[in-house]
Structure formats: structure tokens, C-alpha cells
Length: 88
Image (cartoon, rainbow, N blue to C red; front, side, top):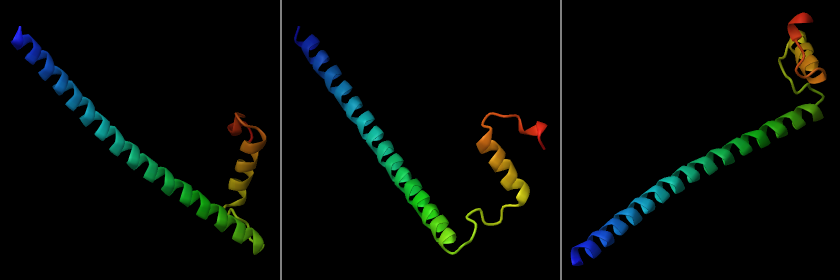
């Protein structure tokens, strides 16, 4: 009977150790994910500032987009899900 109690206690300790290890791994992955999210948000913010500055200077924020690219982008915005190949 004593060995059964010891066996149960060891199993519970092993399970707790495994849970803690899994939680630490999950926490590490979550931290990395949050850092990547912050970097992406910062890049979006920089792009918005860049676009705003360009617009304030009277420049197109599309920069070097060719007229056909602009037309395609406009078509996609106006007709989402439309079949663009019919129109090109």
C-alpha cells in the first residue's frame, strides 16, 4: 500500500513537472509572438507616417506604381472578387 501511494505521488510530481515545462515553452512562444506583433505594428506605423509625409509634400503615396498597377488596384477596390482577367 505504501508503494502505491509513493507511485501515485511520483506520477503526480512528474505530471506537474511536465505541465510546468509545457507552460514555460508556451510562455516563451507567446513572448516571441508579442515581440513580432509589436515589430509589425511599428512597421505599419512607419509606413503610415511615410505615406502621410508624401501626401503632405504633394507626392503620390504609391510611389513608383505604374499606371496599369494603379488601374488594377482601383479595379480590385471597386469590384472585390471580380474577375480582373476579363477587363485587362
